Length: 465
Image (tube, rainbow, N blue to C red):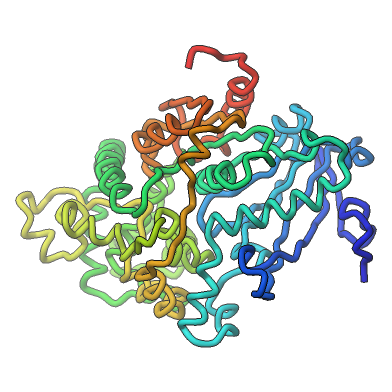
């Protein structure tokens, strides 16, 4: 047993090792499942990789922390092979030590899966448990961790942490700014200034048209894929195709490959899969195990099920249920554009028109087509009808914000609509928003220019925005 008097940074039982540019410490923290109900003694174990720049290992107690919050919801932080490049190097050059948090429910932080949820009993009990895995709980975990790591620092300023949030990580930062602004020294948001909504419907009314545009751009680049995709969709309507993991490759699931259109290089990766599948059908009349395996690997909903079952809840506040908003909006306004049933495709005004891929949206039929999600179907259906979601953002606090905030929004972002983001950025006092069409949603991972520019914004080095 480790004495409670020993500072977290002084523990000798922590596993550690070097990667190029930094020493990694693998830390676990016990957090309340429900931070606001002290009578609830249930806990979740949250994992964080703490990376100290090489040569500064003896400065852990004084170096400021920058906490990285990953996109999602439902994705863990990966272990970098090196911190000598990318945003890691930028942050280190700014004087920080790094903390990469696996948000609760992901990675090594009480991961959510059909297997782990089964231990919680009934569907009702499982759904109640998962309700504690939203941004407000994630932020309270980070606040507990901040207090543990910064304990003993002599000034209030030295006890604050900087935040970097990618995509959903930016949603979490905005919640952090609402709940604990005095704990934050500065905040950087990349592709994740959230819409301040009470329900998701407006999100999909904004993003479906962007997805139509991306499909048009894809087929302009790969015009021969119009015929290839139609052939694949016709085949998947006629055949029952089972994936190696037991899931079903339906036409509607194949269309979900379009989520890659929102990332740099996404067109090329989808084209490669389309070409492979079409070639299989031409030469063998069926899809090969290799093609099926690659298609399944391009979809993350089975390995990261929170991405489906909690996706729309990230937009829900003040008693509103999601009720499969993307599906409802699609059926009401965009059904013909994203049709997947072959007989209906042939009945369209232009039966030879391209079949469009879908983007970052979740649908109730996924609970049948994906092997792991089938086992979570009842829980997912329950969560979609849940009306007890509380407030994630405090617009009054955001309007009075004094924390330096810099955010990049991508003009062509098909995940987080730039128009909705711009409204929120105008709500957060002192937020410096950079809007660019130079990058897609994954700009932070593509170019170090993104974090470097944001740090310059925070310093006042760029004043024309």
